[in-house]
Image (cartoon, rainbow, N blue to C red):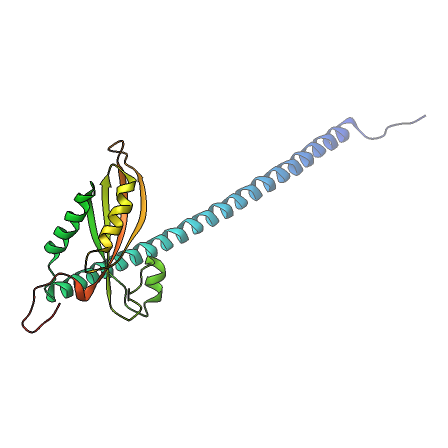
Length: 211
């Protein structure tokens, strides 16, 4: 015969203690899990913030670099055009000759742009802009002119390119690209690159000079 000498109150106290211990353990586990999740989340957020800040700093540096390059390019363009004007190059005469040849082949000039060559040794700028100083095989300096034209027939562009080569100051005319015009159905927007001999460009004759 088993006789329980422990009072019922002792068992109740034991049960209460076990519940408290179980609750404490569960609270500790849940608290540890939440704390871990919080710190992991904070670490992840901090990492993302650092990444974003790093990209913003990099973007700011690239923006400054681009602005500096644009400023340098603008100054270089002004300097180059000033040099051409100093040689009394007749830009109006150039445009007139180009327009005469282009309209003869049923095309119209949309824009023409003189591409400023980069100085030798500027390898970084050359890599970025894919432009280098243009010279003929015998060392004569060339001026690159990008001609944007519009017209109805691609066949006319081929004939136009050949005709441009016949201008006395044109060293070489090259067809670059052509695409259907979005604004005018049936017409094409084309690009022709002209390499002009700088020494042969139309200019005011000075006394004693020969062209």
